[in-house]
Image (cartoon, rainbow, N blue to C red; front, side, top):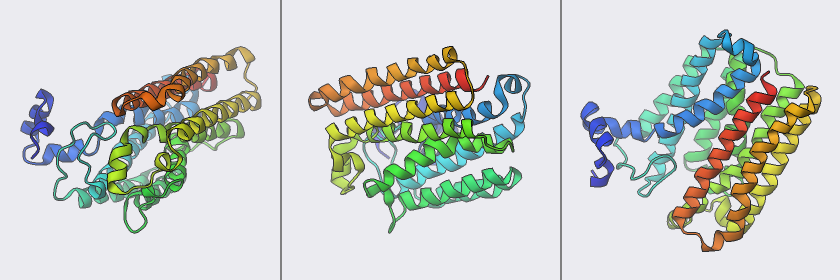
Length: 308
């Protein structure tokens, strides 16, 4: 076991609570990402029931079940499955100084993914189908001979749809409510928004991806084009949000709330585009986390505008 993988006090506490490699299994599910994933997933429930329905706990039990299945079993299982094949040694998203890969991480991750699909039978059919699509994409993304995460462009498409649109749709689907055109545009907008975010998650991993021979989208495009595409996709996402405002007949004043997260995205992306050649991997990683903050602000603004 690598020493620094257990160095911090909270990790030492975790390994005492789950001895042996038990805590390593949990870490490879990357629980640091769960709050962000849960918030983006729950957005779909809030959009489906509205603020009043959320305050009254409408479909809350189904939403909580969907959150556990989607965030812990599907997302956590997907990340563990990815690690089982990547054998990451350096920092990865939401896990610094990862512990050595436990012996049974692969079957453990498959059990989580398959178990979630079985438990999804307790929720509406739309959720079951949504989970099944993302389960299949997880396997295609991580597992040889497919390993689409190493096929530039395909990795991008899988993530923009999987995390961007299908994730919030999961909690919407758990309510059993039919999806109307206006809210469909809102969920669709998160597809190009994640298309903007995804290459940003790869910029600080250039060296490690080259070492493994993975031809990621960001490596193929280069940093300059990756950042230019991110700017374009962010603008497209907010154009779709604007279209949803029109379709749903929302007052212009409320629609202007979306200008705040748009400004946050541009404040993150334009300086990054200008200075990217001078930035170290650590600075690119900090840029990624700033983009995630802009994403969180977007979720809050979308709730304010569309879940009323």
